[in-house]
Image 1 (tube, rainbow, N blue to C red):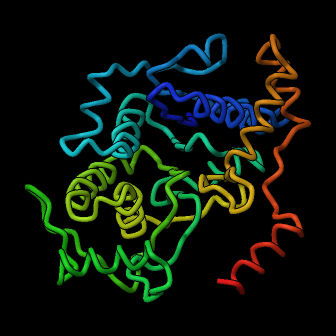
Image 2: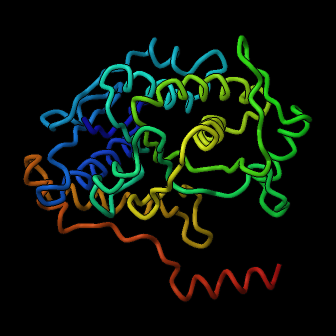
Image 3: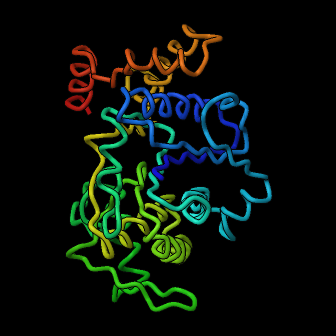
Length: 295
């Protein structure tokens, strides 16, 4: 069985807005691209997905607290949810952040997942990057080397995890594709994330842990040519909204235009609709160039 997985909690409206369109984008392809794929949504707010052909798993407040762990790390929930999903359903599983959509049939992504093969959205370069102009790269490098001078991360009850600076790359965890045979690696990633979080506290420990474990133990492939991931939530100077907000406005118009439509009607409409990514207009490029020169 091939399964897509979404995890959302906190009852934040734009998460359900994003997830609804992402699901439609996965299932909108002609026969042969989606008929063998199931969709599961783990959430504390099932209402937006009522009457949709998805398997709903209800999260309680107690479960969310447990999944966030002793450090109350929100994105730890992603790894625990992946463990839960593979244990419950098995097969091939692709997790997606809600701020995604399929630009190609989901089957193309599943073709890259199997025993010994895994998937993440895109490679962002070496974990121990020498690029000191990148604040995140600098924080990671300084934090890892200060806390673990020998690049060996201790883990309770387990052998220390060695970070290979030649092969250790950061991958984006907006997409994570795994086969049931790789379920033990998720426990490795969870233990590594738990060891990293108290040291870094940067909010990307689950992404770093998944990146390091999967590329060490599997052939890790990208999905950026198959799945669009519009994660940028930082306001655009001169406009006051983010590229992600720009997508939200289009999704809101899409669902408003099809109010009361059935799932099948929405899926048919989604076949003719793809949001536009934000592109800076000429006047904004000129304004930002002027601001840099003036500063």
